[in-house]
Length: 408
Ligand SMILES: [Zn+2]
Image 1 (cartoon, protein in one colour):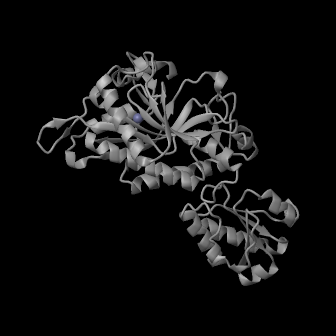
Image 2 (cartoon, helix red, strand yellow):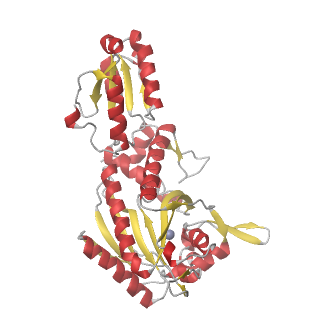
């Protein structure tokens, strides 16, 4: 495995500037392309799974976090409040309180549940500068977050469905969990005091894990302050574990925000909140992907998907026209002409690009493409339209395979 900080800089994916500040990386165009593909994958998967997306602001009044419980349980990780006249506003440490208020803003019938609300939104954590570096410990975080407001009877199915979304995402991303962790409260004052609530929520998640057949470990002291979690752990280049994905059950915040729905009996009932994240923060997810793949991302995530290599100056116009056709199909393509060196040198420079399209005199005349795959396979020349359509289909399928053996 590679160190994502080193590779991220070498591959022009992200960087930092002391004037912006520690723990506040910015994304260069190639890194932004990876991140955008990842975000679009998640949003599409969420739409298919019945989630609706919202936007909410990254600031909130201090009182909001006093009600949610963050102020008393989590303030060590929060930025100090900013005074605005008579009020204080805070950079949010999580999206849950905003989503709870969005839910509360309209009345809900039991027929609307489970109500799945998703947002890829910003949140902030006052990490100490000593632990900052790269994309794994950052102060500004873009979180793939969602909250499912549901009845207690629906919690298990929703948690199960979230685990299934995580499994499919890992398959597309080519990443493997290091382990599944049932994160329980431990000693100390970090957790809300409500023994019956903890017993119920822990029983629900334990049941989901037991039924899933996944191997897991129960670990004390790792729960959220409001409830237990199923955490999907991944390991970095140095073998250090961190949480990428999570599924959490929360009886606390619905109580704090006095959320309700109208049941079939016409009376008001309290929903449960299931918090879940498929890929965690985009920062940590991309850091892990860089380390996992050494920069050779699955084709659907690659910053450049098709590198077009004209053999000589004479094929340059054809190469540029081919790049145009790629871009029109929504593929990310780049031309590396002879000014960048010999064909062999250009093939080596493009070694992380999944598809290399070599255009010689014969290919240019026939409108054919001779494709080289990143894994070393070379395909016979075939009509450019066929090749591009095939690449487009593999990218759309979020395929981990560069080529379909049956099609070559
Ligand atoms: Zn949440």
